[in-house]
Image 1 (cartoon, rainbow, N blue to C red):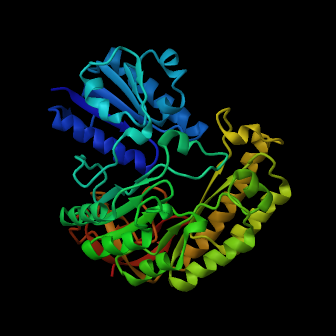
Image 2: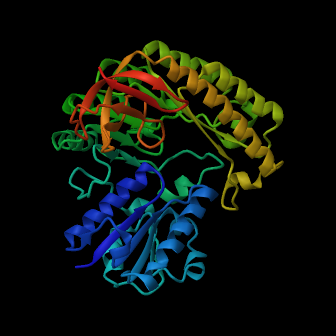
Image 3: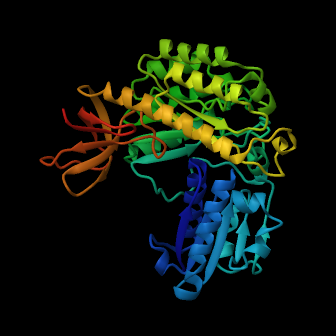
Length: 442
């Protein structure tokens, strides 16, 4: 038996992979621990999507590597997107690491922990060769009362700035009945929110025969897990059809929450991104249609500044669009260049300081929008999912329009009540900041 600690980085899909690794390790007789200091084997499950994520991963590896000389750690294993993307460089640059496992090789984690791999070995496999998760996949859940369900793997799109298809392979969807049964089992096990995830979740089922779609999947999950919230992340603008909107509107336990990354609104920039021939008018019509079909829908998007060729006029098109739509939540990031991206070969790269200044302007605008929207909620009542007991009479939770990790929280002051994590409670909002809400039991 080896005491194993997992340090998970990156997106929710990485969380699911990490939980599957923990399941393999526990099945093999190893003990999962929550403290790296006492672990005999440490796994760093990495992200390599953009420079900032890669740097965060490397920093975590180097910090945890110190426990090999000053702690109980005997084996340090790096998994996920970083080794898959930088396979030629990592073994030499990180000699502290005993084994590297790519995105298609995490099922070899037991061998890596057992020391059955050559020191410094980098095991890479075609991501498509790794079987998809099923409802029987042994996972050690780490995010209670929320459970993430990966409904698909990979992506068939060819956005010029994105490395995901190379790291995760082509689109592969799980059978809908398998996902629905997993959602039902998670709900019966006490998970209060079930989040359906994929790189482009709205493309779910396009590879299946007969064709399946996200609308049918959401309907099945909502019906078999009526006691849990159902949420989906993320959507592509081209895939938001009327059936999906109706599925969200029809079921009260489906979160009316649409996370649809648009990346930009300038037709010129979108074309260079490989995102089609859309413009602000297309996106405005899309978000209007969502708000009309699903009253009270929360809208979130992600945009990018500094993409090669982005002019000040291009940026102002996006700035004015964000101001006009009034997103409930918005994330912005700076274009991250790398030689393995098609966008690297485009002309007119934007200076980093210009890209950063543009992002700051966008986020300042969004801060003002979010504050006004949150202040308008004061006095209203919402259902809140309790996620953490602060042990001081206050609790941290979320509403349906606050997604886990990426959005704000709702702080509930309930000194006289013994609330439990995973419980739903009606809350009256009493105060608001740019991103968070405060309230008391209604």
